[in-house]
Amino acid sequence: MALKIPNHLAIIPDGNRRWAASQKKKVFTGHSEGSHTTERILEAAFDAGVNYFTIWGASEDNLTKRDSLEIKTLSQVFIQALAKLSKSQELKKYNVRVYVRGRFKELLKNKKLNDIAKSIETSTNNNTGKVLTVLLGYDGKNEMIHAMQSLQKADKIINDETVRSALFTDTLPPVDLVIRTGGEPHWSAGFMMWLTANSEFYFTGTLWPAFTSKELQKAFQEFSKRRRMLGK
Image (cartoon, rainbow, N blue to C red; front, side, top):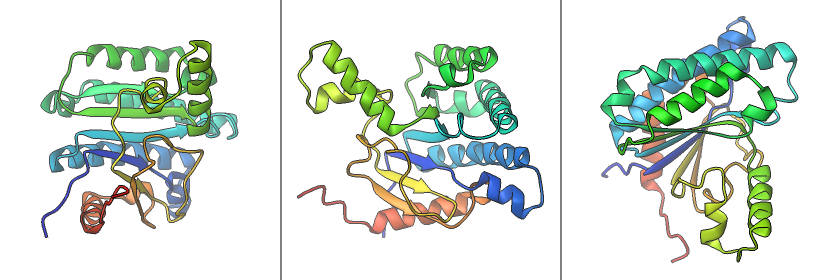
């Protein structure tokens, strides 16, 4: 059976803190290792033929309900990851357009993070190869509320086209495959609800820092077996 590769892959990378606990290490180590995993899986996904890669770096709850030290730690991990990404060979190799979306600016109020996010978006603005979207301070329910409010304010007719144009993720096509790691098979915070309406979901017990390219291949193999009727 030929392997089918999703055009748009979205990942809910759960399990950083549990991985750190299992290794008897501090929470920071889990988030840091999770960031390294994202680098490896991004490259493996692009190599396999994925064109759009979306990673959920943090939800709104992650940035508001956790203790202040962990939130500060997350901010530093985001800054380091985006700074490293901006200088990476993969960015050039795949001519990647990068988007950083969500309410992280107003929730974290971290100028350094805001600056690096703006810089990497600006510097990749004309890239026409692959697309990487990083969701920080993202909540799918609030994304939809914001979209409805925007359309109401603009007095626009509400249909599929106008709703999609009002999303934080307005530049992205529908998600073909969602991978959630961490062994807790559920949806969270209405994750990309408009773009995952017809997605396939793949759940694995592997914690995100331990997720490998072999695990990614397993997900693709399972995806290849699915019959995507899409209402037909």
